Image (tube, rainbow, N blue to C red; front, side, top):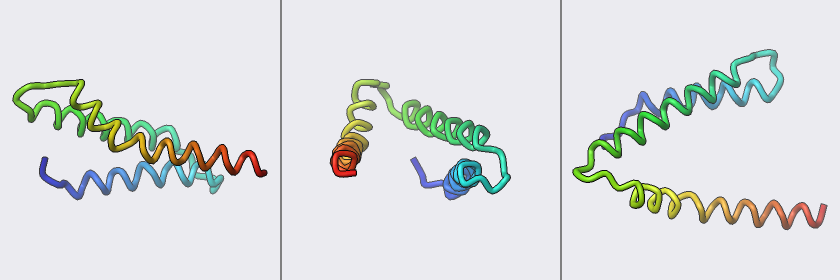
Length: 86
């Protein structure tokens, strides 16, 4: 899939809406930011799956798990370690 800068811009807007909502700056829109992020993710996932000749959800989820799980496991480990000491 070709890189699209406008998608990164929309991601930035959605993340800023959530961050500003949590920072209590009086700006609401956290739910809208999450919704925008989910729509972008759905668009990208659908685009990736439909560009392939054969759609294999198994291969798709294996690629995602190889990318996401290492950092997720590391984050959980560090959180548990810090939780133990604090």
